[in-house]
Length: 359
Image (cartoon, rainbow, N blue to C red; front, side, top):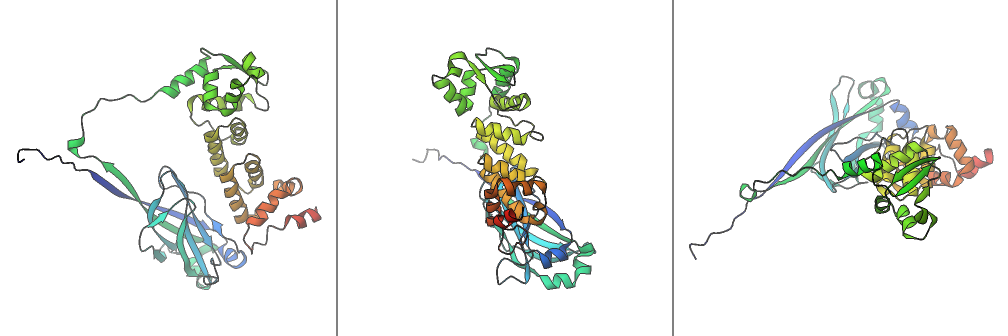
């Protein structure tokens, strides 16, 4: 059938490489190398829009074979697109600003959240300390990690593209937000600290399993269309309702802890994770014990794991805070968990039974 046309299609997969360099300076490094046994983790950084990474340094290696070395690793903490393929290289910045001890990965490695790759024998610890004037100016170790991350995009061939009609963006969230903001067509009243807020049962039921249960069963709230909301401040309640109606993240800077409690109580899992992320980004020595308490109270697994890791990495400082000492007395089971998560050679987190005997 020589006259028949042969259907053909040409598509194109574009793989681009995104390069990113992260510079991390650790002060008082001779003390860290000689006295501290646990690993040290860098602050979190991002390479793409939806991923989080960190570096981890083991001053005394990761096993018996590497005990005389400084071990360094690149860690993927989270990513919406998994796995992530990336090459990496590490180097130290000398007192003259030059690259030294450059180590490059031989190929791209596959990262999934929680995965790390690096060098367990990055540099001999004695060499580093004996050349402190050159490699540790002002007792600071400056470590640089360059990451080359592969990004995949697909494009259709020209003959498969058709001129289309421009479709407006979806404005559903804006329109539902207006219903809430202007109290239009409402059918139930929510009472918070004596203030009345009018809302829509259908939207509340669709977004929250707790509200759905109230309206489905023959409860007083369902019969009277009036719901008392205890234990919430009006400001926090408003932020929660904005999320219920629009799905957008509220300002979490000042109310992440209170919104975490609200999201947990009303079954708003996405908001709950947003609050966990905000609390993790704000994690510090001073608030680590309280954050661990919140994570445990509201069954926030990811936040709890990250907070325990942070406490382990900053054990000596955290153990001196007033919140930690309060937790030893009131919540010894959390101290037991922190104790159990620390490395075998971490001297700062004492066993909670010993702490309780002294207090």
